[in-house]
Structure formats: C-alpha cells, structure tokens
Image (tube, rainbow, N blue to C red; front, side):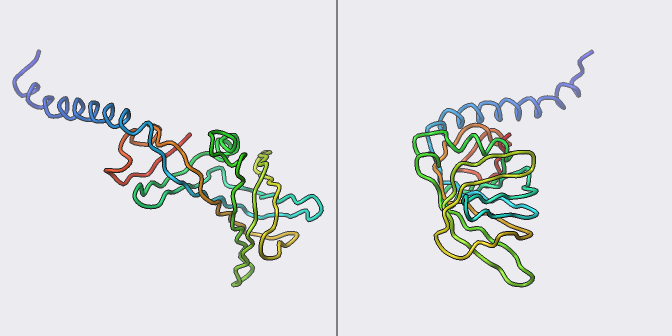
Length: 178
C-alpha cells in the first residue's frame, strides 16, 4: 500500500537518481573524444638489472600501477599492472611507437639513487615485471631493494571508465581502471 509518506520519502531519491543518470550520459558523450597526458608510477619490493641484456626486472611489483594527470585535468587513479602491460602498445601515440623515459628511484639506506632510462618491451610474469632498458643517466645497480619507476607521459583518451563514471574537467575525482 502506497501512502503519502512513502511517496514523499521516495521522491528525492528518485529525482537524484534521474539527475545523476542524465548527467552521466551527457558527460560521457561529451568527454569521449578528449585526451589527457598521464604519468605512471610502479613500485616493487626489489629489482635486478642484467647489464649485458639490458633487462630491468622489478621483483614483487605492485599489482596496481598508479597514474595521474597534471592541470587542467587533475585526474589520479590506478589500474591493474596486468592491464597496463598490454595497454603499452595501444593508440597512435603509444609507448611502443615512442618508448618513454622513466626515473628508476632506489632507496639505499638514507640515500636515494635515481637512474634515467628508456623503457621498452614490458613482460609481466607473476609479480615480476621485466623491461628492456637503455640507461641514459646514472648507474644502475645489479640488485636493489625498494624500487620505484616513474614513467613519462602518454596521451590517453578520457574514457567513461572512471570510478564515478563521469566528470573529467569539471570535477576532481580519482579514476579506477580495471
């Protein structure tokens, strides 16, 4: 039995859902063609470097790769590292066609060692992520603990895959890719 109290209580929730649904559809179609420049960060429990083969292996790499965009988008979020690896070769401005520079940061006691490299050919096996690298600056150790890799910019479409499903420029929200 529907009473006036039930109807009045449900009306605000229904109106909010209707507005949110229309807003999501409008912003999704509006932002589908826009792109943003994203930077990526990966962390690992350790790393090894094969100087002869130029292979950097992040051992115990996090299952999540962080990404963020600078002004004006101000988007931040994460994606599964397993999703990031095949994403490497997608798009006309992909890392496959233009390999990114990256900063490999290693904490050695209280000393931070930073090595600038070019990353290529990522391969994820379990929780080990291997890159072919060319060292541009610094000296890569053969082995280290607590490594972080900060990967240079790539243009990505602003797709409707955000955690909230909407809003790129107007709102400052975290994005979560799966």
